[in-house]
Length: 76
Image (cartoon, rainbow, N blue to C red; front, top):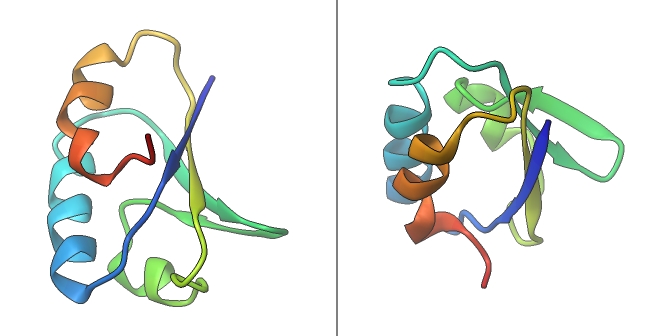
C-alpha cells in the first residue's frame, strides 16, 4: 500500500483527479482525519474537508503509473 498526500482545492481539480484515478484498476481511498471515501467518487470527495491536505491510499505497491499521473495534485 502507498500513501500519498494530495491537495484538491477546486471543483475542476476534483473532476480531473477522479477522471485520472478511474483509469486505473487499483483500489484507492481518500483519507481526511478519520473519514475515508472512495477516491473514484466525486460525491465522496466533496464530503471531505478539502481546505486541508488529504491522503490518497493506493492498495497496491506497483502503481508508479498512477503516481506519475497524479503529480499535479500531490503536495511536494
